[in-house]
Length: 157
Image 1 (cartoon, rainbow, N blue to C red):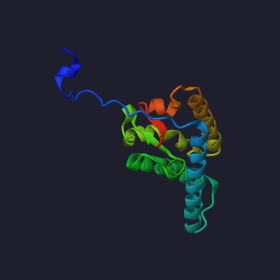
Image 2 (cartoon, rainbow, N blue to C red):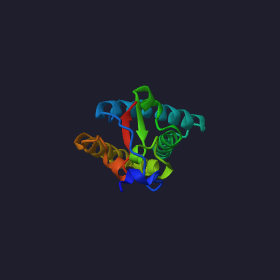
Image 3 (cartoon, one colour):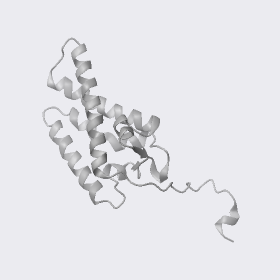
Image 4 (cartoon, helix red, strand yellow):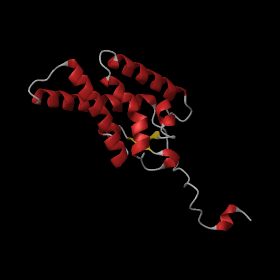
């Protein structure tokens, strides 16, 4: 008897939808677009808070805002404005339409490095480089952050 004879199998994940992985260049430019959006919002918020321009406050705020921005968009719709503009989306493990809260939080946790006083920008830059190398070296164009999140993937729409 084959598994096809057993009827519906609720314990099995549905097969992932065939998709073309988003390449590193397109993903990079989507991050740049999203970074501009987050930084404009961050500067606007800091200026509107009576000119609190202390670099520590700005780094703390922009690091947290970046994290919340990416997690909120990925969980809600599976893309950020930068990704949507460049024809990309984030899929959850096994081809699910988008990551859940835990997967997205793990996937984007490296953005919180910017919150570390004085060295956060350097640590975040190093994380971005290491993730880019891991994406470039992966046959499925998944970065280490995608692997840690259970197998999320950025794909072309």
